[in-house]
Structures are given as structure tokens and as C-alpha cells.
Amino acid sequence: MSLRVDDKLPKYKSSLYAVLEDALTDGSRDILIRAKTKAPYKKGGLRSNSDNHQEGRLKWRVSFWVEYARFQEFGGDSKKRIINYSTPGTGKAFLKSSGDEQVTKLANQIKMHAGRART
Image 1 (tube, rainbow, N blue to C red):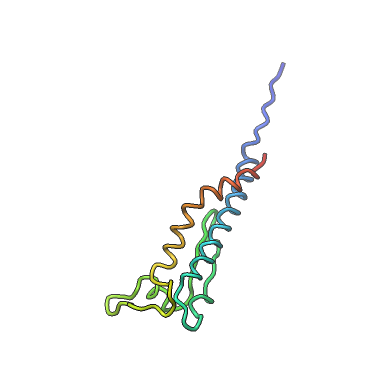
Image 2: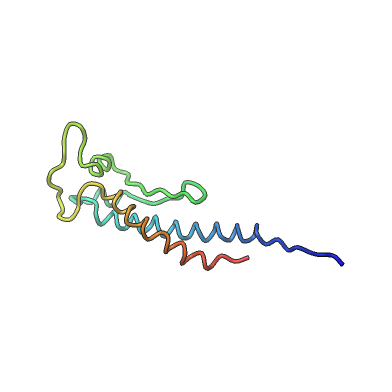
């Protein structure tokens, strides 16, 4: 009598990586949307020059591509501080706070997507 073992772990691992990529894609998109609503707005340059892109396996980055984005994110620099933002409800740390909000939701997003992983 012989015993045959059907190892489906590699197939499941591959499926799980694909599902986790979907969860991180959704998470990075949600961070970008939330950060755009929190970003200061005067002429629209900061909000329009932004994107989310994949940097590697299970690695995503949300970026704002204007020169003054860092200045706005940190509320100034060593020479000048921003006191009044052009749009009410916006302010410094618009990207960090959006990411922090999404981290609390990420576990639920992963659970939602992980059910689709198959062998």
C-alpha cells in the first residue's frame, strides 16, 4: 500500500499573495482618496499631482509629486511655519493621518479578501 501526498501549499501561497495584493491595492487607493480630501487646496496642484503605485511584491507607495508637498505635509520647515491653511478642514499631516486611519481598517480588508484565496 502506498501513500500519496498532494501538497497544495505552493498553489495556496501563490493565490494568497494575489489576494493580499488586491487588499493592499484597495488600501493604498483609499489612503490616496482620503489624503486628497485632507490636502490643502488653493489652485489644485497638490491634489492633482498624486498617485499610488506598486514598488514591489506586497509593497505600495502613495506619493504627491509637487515641490511643496513636503512643506505642506509637515506644516512648514525650520524657517517658516504654516499657521492658516487655504481650505478649512485641511492641514498638516494630511498623508500621515490618512495612512493611520487606513491601518485600522487594513485587518478587516485583508480578512475580506483572504476568503478568496484558494488551492
